[in-house]
Image (tube, rainbow, N blue to C red; front, side, top):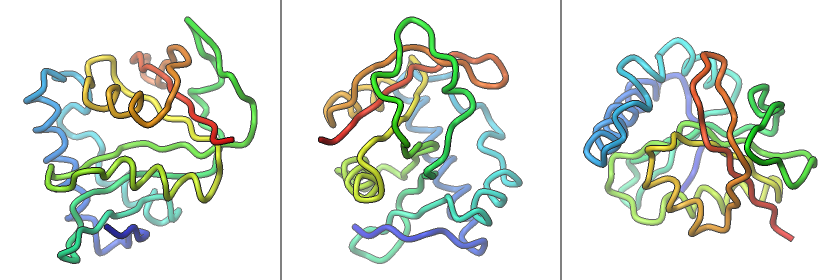
Length: 163
């Protein structure tokens, strides 16, 4: 696998990967996360322009995954309920991890890449996203509490600090 920053000409591939990820979520009982139209094209294009969207390429050279990653304070993480953040250090936030289902070990590869940028990572996911929750636990993340998105939707918040 290889990770590279997405370019605006990759937008169709990224939107297709979001569609595939949505299908995978639905097939696993996660029917509420990522309603049709989310993530949207305009916001994704803006995130590409900010250099925060990445592609994960397989051995065949094709993009099979995508994710958002930035070293920034996530506004919705400022209030956490039913728990707390263990650390208050600078962190990398990862959002919108998506793939077409063909890459095994993709999240671990992404996390390894992110950890080389910063040892502290925060991520959130929907309560019904059992796949992501399992993978986060497998990769040493601690469930820290509950955060709420700008639209009021609940998400479970996770963190991991490499020592």
